[in-house]
Amino acid sequence: MSDFRSSHKLIETGLWTPLNWRFRACLLVALVLSNVGNGASAQAPSRLVSKVQVSKSTLVSKAPVSKSAPASSPADRKRIAAEQHDKAFAVLSNSPATKAALEGAVSNALAASNLEPRNAAHWFLAGLLYEKLSAQDAKALPMAEKMLSQAVEVDPEYGAAWLELGLMMTAQKRGMEAISALECALEADPAATASYAVGPLCTVYATNDEGLRGLDFFQEQYEANPEVTALGVGEALMLNYLGDRKAALAKARDLVNGQQASASECFYLANLISEWEK
Image 1 (cartoon, rainbow, N blue to C red):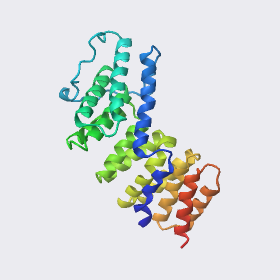
Image 2 (cartoon, helix red, strand yellow):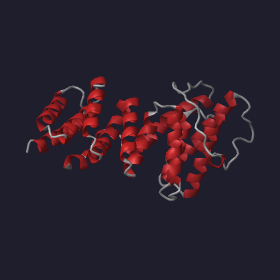
Image 3 (cartoon, one colour):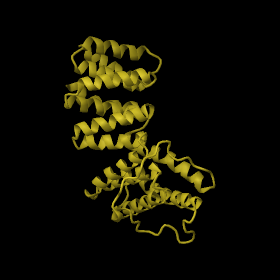
Image 4 (cartoon, rainbow, N blue to C red):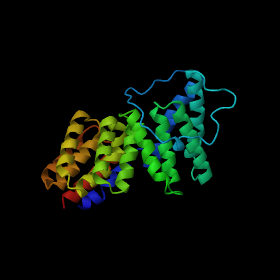
C-alpha cells in the first residue's frame, strides 16, 4: 500500500503544479475570449446539453454588466462576457487575493456565465474562484462544486473541470465519486490531465478496493493513448497493487525503454523499479 500513499508524486511529472495548471487552463480561455472582444469569432463547445438550473440568488452579479453598451446583440454579449471573464481571471491569477476581491471576481464570472450560459469556460472560472474563496469562507466550497458541475453539464468533454471536481472529491474522501470524475478527466483530455489525475486516481482505486477497475481502465486508456506515459504508469501501479509485481516491473521497464516518457517520468519510473526490485 505504500506505493499508493506516495503515488500522488506522479503529479510532479507534469510541467506545471496543479495550481498553475488551473491558471494555465483559464489563461488559454481568457486569450480566446479576448480575441472575441477584438472582433474575432469564437466557437461554442462541441457538445452541449441543457443548462442545469441554478438558484437565481447565486447568479446575481454585484456589479452592473455594462453601463455604456447594453447586451442587446450576440456580439455585445460576447464582448461584455469577455470583459467580465478577464476581470475575474485577473483576480484568480493574483495570489494572495482578499476575500472582497474574490467575491467581486465571482460576481464577474457569474455575470459572464449569465451572458453566455452555454460557455463552459465561464462556469469553470467561477468554480475555481469559489474554490479559492473557500480558504476564507467554507460556504464557498459547495458553490465551487456546483459551478464545476455546471461546466461539465454544458460541455461533458471539459477535462479541466472534471479534473478539478475529481481532486476536490478526493480531498473530501468521496471515493467512488472521485473515481468517476477523474476517469472522465482522463477520457476527455488524457494528454493534458494524466500527469495530475493518475496519481490521485491510483490512490483512490486502492483505498476503495477498486484495483481491478483501475487496471482495466488504465489498460484501455493506455492502449488508446500510447503517447501518454502516465497512463502506462497507472497500469503498472495497479498491477503491483493487485500483487503481480513481475508484470508491474515489466511494464515499468517497457515505459522507461520507450520513446514517449519524459525525463521526469523516467526518473519517477526508475524510483518505482528500484523500490519494486528490493
